[in-house]
Length: 229
Image (cartoon, rainbow, N blue to C red; front, top):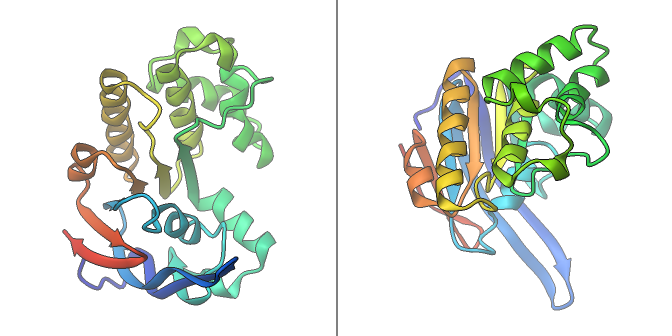
């Protein structure tokens, strides 16, 4: 991960410290890296190593105790919460282990939601195209409870990519799926990533999935044990 002035993500000496029942707890300590536009990064490490915390900091869902994170050349430190939320809507898509679909909305409506929040008049048309891209044209009117786990995750992928984000964060995207379904979803994730030239950052315990990324960041006890390209 050589320095690149056009990097999509820059993390400079990022640390996260919280106070726990036993006093100070260092969750992350001095994390620094850069990720080029269109590249992919797997964040790996044992449970409790700080992976999900780092993902949340990179996405601007939380603020570091010290250090700086830039997305698309914009320092998150310079933004308030409302401005960070606006940046996420413009630049970022999310995929989670537990799908995070709204149960009262159909597949179509779940995918439309981020576009409707932006006031897009073409939300339904774009949602249908996104669902077609993940092979769910026949499931647009189905509700989450009527879909398998793999189908729900494909809806989540369609929702994440529907506004063509420059950056996608995925937290254990295959963690709740069986091996065969997880493989199919991961294939789809990388196909969509490549087709949209999206920068991908994923947290995973799946070493085969991590190996498909162009870069890997190995965390151990909140420190970057290894950064490999």
